[in-house]
Length: 267
Ligand code: HEC
Ligand code: HEC
Picture 1 (cartoon, rainbow, N blue to C red):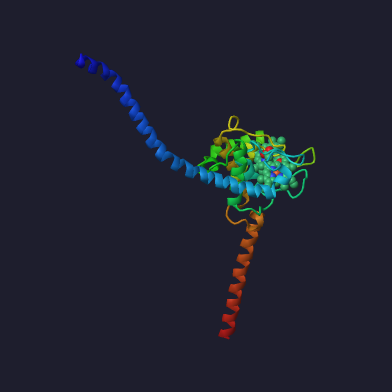
Picture 2 (spheres, rainbow, N blue to C red):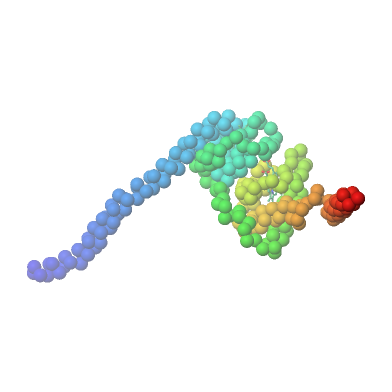
């Protein structure tokens, strides 16, 4: 009987042991993980808190105390860190006064402050994130891929920004700015967030690879004037001929002077 009962208890002991093991692992995990995640959490929350403070002094008069929007400016819930990084990084925000279109200009904020405000706005609702440099780097693009970037640009962007990205006026009195000096990061962010009348080009329609090719195309187009040796004022063969002439005549004059002095001495 005794023997039988232990044999009968044995099968129940196995699940019990398993349960004990689970509890042990669980509490060990609970001991380790909160310290790791809470330090990450407090990092994020101190960023968000610092961003909120900057936001309240510089942005809330138009966008509302909690970024909910006012009659002056739209809600920022869901616009994402990328939108803030673009708007503040390009000097558009904070807008000086309510107007139709905020011009791009040098920003007074440090990149640290901008990322704090971006973290705060991202905490309101999820939206497009700030890209990492490998998402917009154009390193290693082939000539074929750059040509494809040109095609994508002509199809999707040139109607507003001009065929070479030099910018243009829009029908309602606003303008699409020149892209001659825009950084790859801002091009990426503008495409993902669509400022003002510009449409949003989400990852579903334009992959990161497509965006890179467009950036690469714009970079090569805008770098072209200084591509081939000395620009010499950009006048091409004529000015190069002129220089050859000036230097050539100069050399002849020097030889003539030298000959004249030699002749004078020998007399
Ligand atoms: C004088 C009012 C004003 C102030 C101050 C201001 N904004 Fe704006 N903001 C606007 C208006 C108007 C728009 C919409 C028009 C536009 O996008 O140019 C806007 C648009 C934006 C957008 C784009 C939203 C989108 O849909 O992608 C962001 C992001 C933004 N503001 C962030 C900020 C931040 C951050 C600050 C403070 C550093 C700030 N703004 C200060 C008026 C203001
Ligand atoms: C319907 C017209 C329109 C189209 C199409 C369009 N954009 Fe724009 N884009 C604009 C306007 C308007 C602005 C200025 C927004 C502002 O000032 O807030 C802008 C701004 C930008 C900026 C910011 C420039 C700066 O100096 O900070 C970039 C970069 C940009 N666009 C790239 C593109 C690319 C790349 C495409 C194609 C994939 C494209 N845009 C398609 C209208 C357009």
